[in-house]
Image (cartoon, rainbow, N blue to C red; front, top):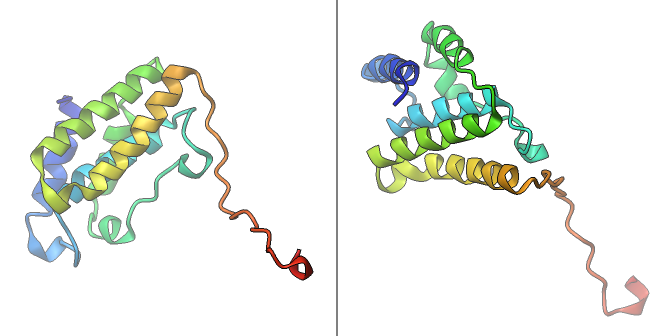
Length: 148
């Protein structure tokens, strides 16, 4: 794993060893998930869906981080690649390594992140542009002629 990412994980895992700093539904895998989200946001993928240009970080997590957040943000910002393909591969590799550390319910957030990043990778490889997500359900035509 990348030395900078190892440093980030070490900082937050050490921080959250103190149960006083853990929020109500804290799981160790949250750390890898939020690091992955920070990387995703930092890389700003061109083929991300409109609704997934950035991933919000949990207020519970951030409010538990104290001064470490600024240090970690600076480390994340220092990770740069010339080619978006390398950024995607880096994030996919990070997620795959994180997924190996956990099992069961602990994988829920990491699996969600992997799903989105894999979609970005597929669109990038195929040259496909991200489609706009439409949240409005199509209106169903009523069989009743008075309601058409």
